[in-house]
Amino acid sequence: MNPSVAPGSVPPGSVPPGSAARPRRAAPLSLEERRASVLAAAVPLLLERGLDVSTRDLATAAGVAEGTLFRVFPDKASLVRAAVGQALDPTDLVEQIGAAHGPDLRRSLTLAIATVLDRGRTVSSLLAVVHQLPRGTEAGADEGRHHHPAHGPVVPGRGGHGPAAHGAGRHPAQAIVEALTALLEPHAAALRQPPAVCARLVVAVALGAARPGAPDPTLPAAALVDLLLDGLLAPSAPHHPETSC
Image 1 (cartoon, one colour):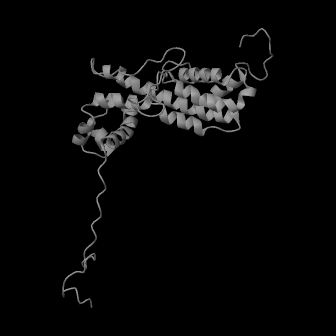
Image 2: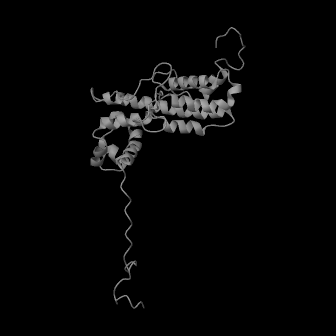
Protein backbone atom coordinates (compact mmCIF):
# COMPACT_ATOMS: atom_id res chain seq x y z
CA MET A 1 0.00 0.00 0.00
CA ASN A 2 1.26 3.46 -0.86
CA PRO A 3 1.79 5.21 2.47
CA SER A 4 1.42 8.65 0.82
CA VAL A 5 -2.19 7.94 -0.21
CA ALA A 6 -4.85 8.26 2.44
CA PRO A 7 -7.23 5.31 2.90
CA GLY A 8 -10.30 5.57 0.64
CA SER A 9 -8.74 8.24 -1.60
CA VAL A 10 -7.89 7.79 -5.27
CA PRO A 11 -4.25 8.06 -6.31
CA PRO A 12 -3.52 10.97 -8.70
CA GLY A 13 -4.03 10.04 -12.37
CA SER A 14 -6.13 6.94 -11.63
CA VAL A 15 -9.81 6.38 -12.46
CA PRO A 16 -12.20 5.70 -9.59
CA PRO A 17 -13.69 2.17 -9.65
CA GLY A 18 -16.94 1.94 -11.63
CA SER A 19 -16.39 5.19 -13.49
CA ALA A 20 -15.39 5.62 -17.11
CA ALA A 21 -12.75 8.06 -18.30
CA ARG A 22 -14.33 11.12 -19.86
CA PRO A 23 -13.47 11.40 -23.57
CA ARG A 24 -11.63 14.56 -24.49
CA ARG A 25 -13.78 16.89 -26.60
CA ALA A 26 -12.58 17.54 -30.12
CA ALA A 27 -11.35 21.04 -30.83
CA PRO A 28 -14.07 23.19 -32.46
CA LEU A 29 -13.78 23.78 -36.17
CA SER A 30 -12.48 27.10 -37.42
CA LEU A 31 -14.78 29.28 -39.48
CA GLU A 32 -13.09 28.22 -42.73
CA GLU A 33 -13.26 24.54 -41.74
CA ARG A 34 -16.94 24.90 -40.88
CA ARG A 35 -17.62 26.64 -44.19
CA ALA A 36 -15.87 23.85 -46.08
CA SER A 37 -17.79 21.20 -44.15
CA VAL A 38 -21.15 22.85 -44.82
CA LEU A 39 -20.39 23.35 -48.51
CA ALA A 40 -19.26 19.74 -48.95
CA ALA A 41 -22.65 18.61 -47.64
CA ALA A 42 -24.68 21.32 -49.39
CA VAL A 43 -23.44 20.98 -52.96
CA PRO A 44 -24.93 17.50 -53.62
CA LEU A 45 -28.31 18.71 -52.29
CA LEU A 46 -28.19 21.89 -54.38
CA LEU A 47 -27.40 19.81 -57.47
CA GLU A 48 -30.26 17.44 -56.71
CA ARG A 49 -33.00 19.87 -55.59
CA GLY A 50 -31.87 23.36 -56.54
CA LEU A 51 -33.45 26.12 -54.46
CA ASP A 52 -36.18 23.74 -53.30
CA VAL A 53 -33.83 22.40 -50.63
CA SER A 54 -34.51 23.96 -47.24
CA THR A 55 -31.90 25.43 -44.91
CA ARG A 56 -32.99 22.84 -42.35
CA ASP A 57 -32.14 20.05 -44.80
CA LEU A 58 -28.83 21.71 -45.59
CA ALA A 59 -27.99 21.99 -41.89
CA THR A 60 -28.98 18.35 -41.27
CA ALA A 61 -26.79 17.16 -44.15
CA ALA A 62 -23.87 19.15 -42.72
CA GLY A 63 -24.48 17.76 -39.22
CA VAL A 64 -25.01 21.19 -37.65
CA ALA A 65 -27.89 23.11 -36.14
CA GLU A 66 -29.75 25.50 -38.42
CA GLY A 67 -28.54 28.38 -36.27
CA THR A 68 -24.95 27.28 -36.84
CA LEU A 69 -25.59 27.25 -40.58
CA PHE A 70 -26.73 30.88 -40.44
CA ARG A 71 -23.64 31.85 -38.47
CA VAL A 72 -21.53 30.57 -41.35
CA PHE A 73 -23.77 31.76 -44.20
CA PRO A 74 -26.28 34.56 -43.52
CA ASP A 75 -28.80 33.18 -46.03
CA LYS A 76 -29.32 30.54 -48.68
CA ALA A 77 -28.25 32.90 -51.47
CA SER A 78 -24.84 33.44 -49.91
CA LEU A 79 -24.41 29.67 -49.52
CA VAL A 80 -25.28 29.12 -53.19
CA ARG A 81 -22.80 31.80 -54.26
CA ALA A 82 -20.10 30.23 -52.09
CA ALA A 83 -20.82 26.81 -53.62
CA VAL A 84 -20.37 28.26 -57.11
CA GLY A 85 -17.15 29.95 -56.09
CA GLN A 86 -15.81 26.69 -54.69
CA ALA A 87 -16.75 24.75 -57.82
CA LEU A 88 -15.08 27.37 -60.02
CA ASP A 89 -11.80 27.17 -58.12
CA PRO A 90 -9.44 25.12 -60.35
CA THR A 91 -6.94 24.22 -57.60
CA ASP A 92 -8.05 20.64 -57.01
CA LEU A 93 -8.83 20.17 -60.70
CA VAL A 94 -5.23 21.03 -61.56
CA GLU A 95 -4.06 18.44 -59.01
CA GLN A 96 -6.29 15.76 -60.55
CA ILE A 97 -4.96 16.52 -64.02
CA GLY A 98 -1.43 16.24 -62.66
CA ALA A 99 -2.28 12.82 -61.20
CA ALA A 100 -3.39 11.64 -64.68
CA HIS A 101 0.15 11.83 -66.13
CA GLY A 102 1.36 8.59 -67.68
CA PRO A 103 3.05 7.00 -70.70
CA ASP A 104 -0.25 6.17 -72.42
CA LEU A 105 -1.48 9.44 -73.97
CA ARG A 106 -5.00 8.20 -74.68
CA ARG A 107 -5.50 6.96 -71.14
CA SER A 108 -3.98 10.05 -69.53
CA LEU A 109 -6.02 12.41 -71.66
CA THR A 110 -9.21 10.43 -70.97
CA LEU A 111 -8.66 10.71 -67.21
CA ALA A 112 -7.93 14.43 -67.47
CA ILE A 113 -10.92 15.20 -69.68
CA ALA A 114 -13.19 13.17 -67.40
CA THR A 115 -12.30 15.48 -64.49
CA VAL A 116 -12.82 18.61 -66.61
CA LEU A 117 -16.18 17.32 -67.89
CA ASP A 118 -17.34 16.47 -64.38
CA ARG A 119 -16.38 19.90 -63.06
CA GLY A 120 -17.93 21.67 -66.03
CA ARG A 121 -21.25 19.89 -65.52
CA THR A 122 -21.21 20.68 -61.81
CA VAL A 123 -20.50 24.35 -62.48
CA SER A 124 -23.26 24.53 -65.10
CA SER A 125 -25.78 23.00 -62.71
CA LEU A 126 -24.83 25.34 -59.86
CA LEU A 127 -24.98 28.39 -62.12
CA ALA A 128 -28.50 27.30 -63.07
CA VAL A 129 -29.34 27.39 -59.35
CA VAL A 130 -27.86 30.89 -59.09
CA HIS A 131 -30.14 32.03 -61.89
CA GLN A 132 -33.12 30.82 -59.82
CA LEU A 133 -32.28 33.20 -56.97
CA PRO A 134 -34.65 36.13 -56.44
CA ARG A 135 -33.75 39.17 -58.47
CA GLY A 136 -31.00 41.17 -56.79
CA THR A 137 -29.61 38.31 -54.68
CA GLU A 138 -27.72 36.65 -57.51
CA ALA A 139 -25.47 39.65 -58.18
CA GLY A 140 -22.78 38.45 -55.79
CA ALA A 141 -22.28 35.35 -57.91
CA ASP A 142 -20.88 37.57 -60.63
CA GLU A 143 -18.21 39.09 -58.40
CA GLY A 144 -14.86 37.72 -59.51
CA ARG A 145 -16.59 35.45 -62.04
CA HIS A 146 -16.52 35.57 -65.80
CA HIS A 147 -19.04 33.91 -68.06
CA HIS A 148 -17.97 31.03 -70.26
CA PRO A 149 -17.21 32.43 -73.71
CA ALA A 150 -17.77 30.34 -76.80
CA HIS A 151 -14.07 29.51 -77.18
CA GLY A 152 -13.74 28.07 -73.68
CA PRO A 153 -14.36 28.65 -69.98
CA VAL A 154 -13.05 31.20 -67.59
CA VAL A 155 -12.44 29.57 -64.23
CA PRO A 156 -11.58 31.88 -61.35
CA GLY A 157 -10.17 30.96 -57.98
CA ARG A 158 -12.05 30.97 -54.71
CA GLY A 159 -11.77 34.50 -53.45
CA GLY A 160 -8.17 34.76 -54.57
CA HIS A 161 -7.00 31.82 -52.45
CA GLY A 162 -4.90 28.89 -53.58
CA PRO A 163 -1.96 28.59 -55.96
CA ALA A 164 -4.18 28.36 -59.01
CA ALA A 165 -6.31 31.34 -58.13
CA HIS A 166 -5.86 34.83 -59.51
CA GLY A 167 -2.16 35.09 -60.11
CA ALA A 168 -0.24 38.18 -61.02
CA GLY A 169 -2.31 39.15 -64.04
CA ARG A 170 -2.81 35.54 -65.05
CA HIS A 171 -6.16 34.52 -66.50
CA PRO A 172 -7.64 31.96 -64.06
CA ALA A 173 -8.47 29.43 -66.80
CA GLN A 174 -4.78 29.43 -67.67
CA ALA A 175 -4.16 27.15 -64.68
CA ILE A 176 -6.11 24.36 -66.36
CA VAL A 177 -4.48 24.98 -69.74
CA GLU A 178 -1.03 24.86 -68.14
CA ALA A 179 -1.85 21.61 -66.34
CA LEU A 180 -2.98 20.01 -69.60
CA THR A 181 0.06 21.40 -71.42
CA ALA A 182 2.31 19.67 -68.87
CA LEU A 183 0.37 16.44 -69.38
CA LEU A 184 0.80 16.65 -73.17
CA GLU A 185 4.43 17.77 -73.30
CA PRO A 186 5.97 14.27 -72.94
CA HIS A 187 3.95 13.30 -76.05
CA ALA A 188 4.82 16.41 -78.09
CA ALA A 189 6.45 14.37 -80.89
CA ALA A 190 3.13 12.61 -81.55
CA LEU A 191 1.08 15.82 -81.74
CA ARG A 192 0.33 17.89 -84.86
CA GLN A 193 0.41 21.13 -82.88
CA PRO A 194 2.46 22.31 -79.87
CA PRO A 195 1.19 21.00 -76.52
CA ALA A 196 0.00 24.45 -75.41
CA VAL A 197 -2.16 24.81 -78.53
CA CYS A 198 -3.56 21.32 -78.07
CA ALA A 199 -4.28 22.01 -74.39
CA ARG A 200 -6.36 25.08 -75.23
CA LEU A 201 -8.30 23.03 -77.77
CA VAL A 202 -8.91 20.27 -75.22
CA VAL A 203 -10.27 22.76 -72.67
CA ALA A 204 -12.55 24.39 -75.26
CA VAL A 205 -13.94 21.06 -76.46
CA ALA A 206 -14.36 19.53 -73.00
CA LEU A 207 -16.07 22.55 -71.44
CA GLY A 208 -18.15 23.08 -74.57
CA ALA A 209 -19.42 19.51 -74.22
CA ALA A 210 -20.31 20.18 -70.58
CA ARG A 211 -22.28 23.36 -71.26
CA PRO A 212 -26.08 23.40 -71.15
CA GLY A 213 -27.47 22.84 -74.62
CA ALA A 214 -24.51 20.75 -75.78
CA PRO A 215 -25.46 18.32 -78.59
CA ASP A 216 -24.87 15.37 -76.26
CA PRO A 217 -24.41 16.46 -72.62
CA THR A 218 -23.69 12.87 -71.57
CA LEU A 219 -20.88 12.31 -74.09
CA PRO A 220 -18.20 10.33 -72.21
CA ALA A 221 -14.61 11.43 -71.93
CA ALA A 222 -13.36 8.48 -73.99
CA ALA A 223 -15.54 9.54 -76.94
CA LEU A 224 -14.16 13.09 -76.80
CA VAL A 225 -10.61 11.77 -76.69
CA ASP A 226 -11.29 9.61 -79.74
CA LEU A 227 -12.53 12.69 -81.61
CA LEU A 228 -9.56 14.77 -80.51
CA LEU A 229 -6.91 12.17 -81.29
CA ASP A 230 -8.48 10.42 -84.29
CA GLY A 231 -10.66 13.11 -85.89
CA LEU A 232 -14.24 12.86 -87.07
CA LEU A 233 -13.70 10.22 -89.74
CA ALA A 234 -14.46 6.62 -88.83
CA PRO A 235 -11.47 4.24 -89.11
CA SER A 236 -12.99 2.55 -92.19
CA ALA A 237 -13.87 5.81 -93.98
CA PRO A 238 -11.77 6.65 -97.05
CA HIS A 239 -9.37 9.54 -96.50
CA HIS A 240 -9.64 12.51 -98.84
CA PRO A 241 -6.82 15.05 -98.69
CA GLU A 242 -9.24 17.90 -99.38
CA THR A 243 -11.39 17.02 -96.36
CA SER A 244 -10.97 19.87 -93.88
CA CYS A 245 -11.68 17.68 -90.87
